[in-house]
Amino acid sequence: MSYLNISNVDVVFPTQNGAFVALHEVHLEIEQGEFIAIIGHSGCGKSTVLNVVAGLLEATRGGVLLENKEVNSPGPDRAVVFQNHSLLPWLTVYENVRIAVDKVFGKSKSRVERHDWTLHNLQLVHMEHALDKRPGEISGGMKQRVGIARALAMQPKVLLMDEPFGALDALTRAHLQESVMEIQTALNNTVLMITHDVDEAVLLADRIVMMTNGPAATVGEILKVDLPRPRNRLELADDPAYNHYRAEVLRFLYERQRRPEAA
Amino acid sequence: MSKVVALATALPVEPERLESSPLVPLSGERIATPAANAERQPPPAPAYVPDPPVSRARPRAVAMARAVILPGAVFLLVLAVWMLVNAKITSDIPTPAATWARAVEIFGQPFYVAGPNDMGIGWQVLYSLGRVLAGFALAVAVGIPVGFLMGASRDVHQACYPLVQILRPVSPLAWLPIGLLVFQAKDPSAIFVIFITSIWPVIVNTAAGVQAIPQDYLNVARVLRLGKLEITRRILIPATLPHILTGMRLSLSVAWMVIVAAEMLTGGIGIGFYVWDEWNNLNVASIIVAIGIIGLVGIALESLMNLAQRHFDYNRR
Image 1 (cartoon, rainbow over the protein chains, first blue to last red):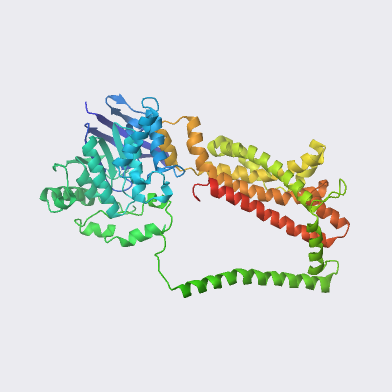
Image 2: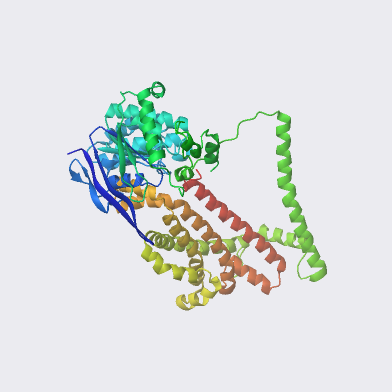
């Protein structure tokens, strides 16, 4: 049995025009320490998969097993890095991470340990210089770094990232991708990341899960990315294997799953 | 929003073009997500352009002159109309000069006490402020919890919304007989009228604030498994505080408007009663001075609330 098992998940939303089948028979098995990227056109239900794993959304049929235990509700063992950072604007950078640390380790760690752990996680994402800033005072990329620090600080079994860099400019995104790679190498987290960026998927993931278009979206293909780590974006640019993987994903997205015109 | 536009135009590749040439880098695709809109980014600071000292001093002088001259011109216009009314329509309206003389007299002895019904203008204002603050405090104390419940529960919202909509536009004076009947006394009735007319902005804004809390904050709370009390204390209250403060600001200005009308009818000591009393004595100059005072106190209350808002509202800090 795999570490994280997304088992034949259906998600059906009731709408005014009858039931809308968002996901149909989504099946995915993820090993510990694996970095999985889910890619697909917008509206295909990528985020719905992540929300089911997070427990924010209930599967209509099927379910999710983490270490052989079914998960039904949200919890810090499946920390989420939200697309738009979701920092609480009235708290400082430090407080935004500390609230998570206090909640998860309130009983198991002392006050000093929790303070140190908060700082440690902010150092991991290189944000220790802005502890007392509020989210409104830092850039979008920095906010997302703090969002990642908050998620990491929960010491999750699975780190869920919902298009974490989608709202950032290309350069900032590249920086953050490097940071995530670095951290994942150091901590060996199990990561499930939603993305619409082909380069990001090939650069970061061990396996790329390509989803078909909705309604009734499901796993179309799974591509194993066999590139040695650490990966370097510049070296990979001319790497035939890297370009082969990219082409595979692009072919899936733009030949077999052409974006519906209405989107 | 400007950031989104800037990013989109700075990107070299359009999504449509990707389909025809699939090997161009995709990294710029789909920047304008709703998340980008949700970013609460302050607009970028304008680039610093050093300019010679002369040209910097001159615009400032011009700006200051404008700030003085334009309102001054309108003020003079109002004075002219006022004098015209005095000269052509009715000489019962005193001239600006006579009014000024009366103002000097009134402000010369603001806190005199010549009997229970004859006190200086300072006392009148203070008594009115006391009633306003009592009614306002009650409105806030009741309005915030009610607004919270209405914002948090669809059932409560559905139950209370029609009542709120019906009672909100009712004129304050319509409540006065009810207050007099129930309380059988002037002061509680006046406070009741303040309460019942200034509570609506608090309720409506608090409810809107709770409803406007982004789902993301609540998702964060769910992932952290915060309890109901923790969610209220750590998410709901701080997230709605800006809305609550807006409601309170509106409420306070309504309360100050209402007090004059209420006191005109209930009597006693207060700026509203003062206006009525001077009307009965045909001291129109005093009434005009009182109008000025009412306006100034209103501005003072408004700035106080602005100060509070700046202090507590995370959007403005």
